Each structure stands twice: as C-alpha cells, then as structure tokens.
Image 1 (cartoon, rainbow, N blue to C red):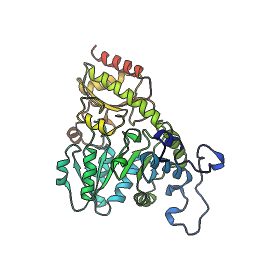
Image 2 (cartoon, one colour):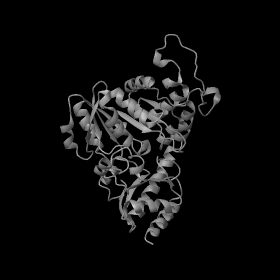
Image 3 (cartoon, helix red, strand yellow):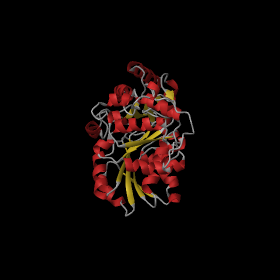
Image 4 (tube, one colour):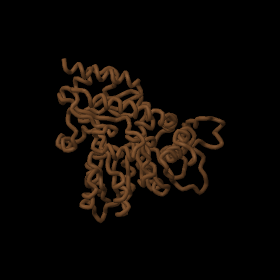
Length: 386
C-alpha cells in the first residue's frame, strides 16, 4: 500500500486477501478457541489475550500502514499501550527522560510505579534541548514525548528529540494521540515508537477504549511478549469498531482542524478570554515549529478566562452544544477543566508548576457546524459580562 495516499490506506490497508467469505469488512472473530498449529511458539498460539486474532492482525496492519511503521500492536487502552511499552523497553533498571507536562496518566504511572519496579525517570523541558544532557545517566534507555502536550498544547522540539536520541543511543518514543497520523507521522521524522490512545481520534466515536503501538517488527515483538503476560488485550468487537472508525479518520480530523482554528481565533478576540493555547495561532509560543512539522494543528485547544475558576464553571453551565466531560476526539465537542479530570491525579503544586490552573478549560472540538459552535461560545461568553 506504500504507493497510495493516507485516505486510501485508511480504507484498504490491512484487509485480508482474499476477503474472508467475501466480506468487505473483517468479520468479528468472537471465539476464544482456535485449532492449534503444530510447532507454534507460545506467543503465536491463536488466543484473544495474545492479541493475534484475525481482527487484531488486520487492525495492526492498517495502523502500521498509516503511521509508516513495520508493525503495530493494539491494546485494551492507551495506558495499556504506554505501560507495556515502557516496561518492555526500560526493564531491567532503565531510566527514562520524560517530557514535562505529559498526559496525567503517563506522569502518575512513572511517578507512582517506576520506583517499585526498579525503574527511574527525570522530567525534561521540551523547549530546552541544551539542558537534556544534564539528565542523562548511564542507564538511560529512552526519551518519551508527546506530539502536543495535554492540555497546554505545547509542541516539543521534535527534531531535537530525534537528534538527541540518535546521539546517545536512546529509543525515541512519542504519544501521537493529539496530532494523529493525519497531521503528523513521527516515524518519518525519525521516531522509533509511536503510541496512541485509540479511544480518541483513531476511533472518533466516543464508544470504545483502545490503545496502539507502532514500531519496528522486533520492537513490537518485544512489547507484545510483555503485553501477553500483562493481559491488556483488545476484544474482537472493539477491534471491529476501531477499524471502522479509522476509515473516516482523515475526513474527521481535517474538519476538526478547521473548526478548532476558527474557535481559537474567536476566543482570542473575546474580551472575557485571558489566554488561548492553540498551535495554529500566531500567538502560540511554538507556532512556527507547528507549521514546520504538522499538516494541521488538531482539534484540541485550551483557554483561560479573566474570571478564573468561577468564570470557567459559569461558562460550562451556559454552553449548550459542548458536553461537559473528559476524553476527546469524538464527533461531539467536549469541554472540561483538566485540574478536575485528566490531571486530577497530580497535586495542586504539580499542576501549578505545569501551568494548569483550576480555571483552565480544555476543548475537544467536534464535528458540529463551525458557525453553530462559534455562536454558542460567543453567547455563553457574552453572558458572563451580565
């Protein structure tokens, strides 16, 4: 499928040939027992927990094709993908350079579990590559960043990450959930491992939980061996839904790119808004970097109101279209306060150090008409003044 464009790969990559009983969609293999093949290795035995049913295989091939990797692995959640990857690539005794401001679940996994697992980490500033050397140790094995951070939408110096990893023999790992392969393909830039919460944009319909890892074939085998024992398997029906969602990924993300930029621009111009964080705005500190690296700046933005937390709560109550809820990447616009959702596991001091105040609002722009979203936010913001 290499000669085809992304949208064509999203539709056709990974489909079994010949088609199973002529089915255009891969049928759901709702079976826990498959006939044994003599001489098969344990990890090759067909079994749902080993993530190797026909549904897993087809989905993995599609994910590898759209990210430009050799192989891919699907998991029961984004955190299953993250934790299995880090355990496989760091153990035993490894040290990780971890981007400051990563997803709260990733940070709390490192902060809460690494020490008892014999692992360690140090936080790095994604915009200060000249300081990373000071955090290097003999046992450092990998560097881990995100395409854009959650919820402040900072864009790390990705070219510097790749150069640093190559210079010091580190595995370069990136969570590409916010950008998606529509806007950014990290493997083409030089990253070794790409992670996704498939729950979000890859699926795009707010109705399943899944994760994905894309990398070289040897790397995926190593991660799969750990995952097989940890048990983070994705059920075949979820595989079917995720494969179906992927077919419209490019169409959805490109629409969300446009609506998010329009909303960010309108918010920045409103008198009640103190600050907007969106890489597509010229005011964003890494705007030039985002334009250099990304095909689009995504559907996520965050902003603060002059009235702080009280105003943020009032705005959520006045909005009609956005759903007040966590997660992201679905067809409906979602709004949440990260201090009470994605980063609730961090202490107030840790959130403050990251710039995540109680009044910060994060928006996942959906697929509603842009004009309707702009009108809704505008009316709700205007009402704050009365």
